[in-house]
Length: 269
Image (cartoon, rainbow, N blue to C red; front, side, top):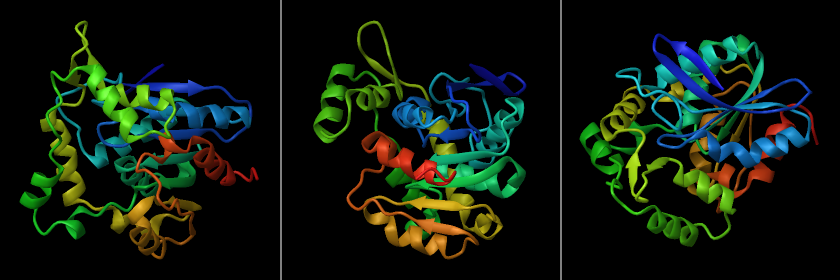
């Protein structure tokens, strides 16, 4: 389905059915797409809960407007999606940059959010990681993938993530478009990508932590555990569930475990 969030801007939303409240809103990371949540959504649906996975503006099948590429704009878009679909309050999960987005959403619109899950993101503080914007920009500018053969990228993804399902690998490929000749091109142009990175650098999420009065579950993978625990200490009602050795894309690597964590926020054992 498509949901209009601003003049000339509609976001694609992937809905998975369920009859039990509350619903779950699932938010991808930077230069990713909603399909990465499909397997998690299947487990939520099997437990009776509907979910809505959103392609943020410029991502997936959503519109690519000329402006609005920032964490704050993405949070405002999500508030409009929740309200337009008549969902509140929902359990909101965000991965990577999507975690930062949903932290801002929950702080600015607490009545829309019943609980919050931060999947290896939500505490990303770029000024703390880089000494200057120029250093951050150089490190985080995305590689040039336009023109690469889709089959070559698929082979790399399968080799790099041998424990991922075929569905997760195919969903990751959908971060890019594939033309009739099997060549890739970016959905999110590099300049818009870097606008988002700059917003992350200028506005780290820590200023919102104390306003998160709803239950918050932080789900760090790999080496981000210490940063997640430091963030949790500044939140009124936070718990941490570590994924040692996990991929940054935990929802692709371990969808059953991620779904179980999300369901724990609504009392499903």
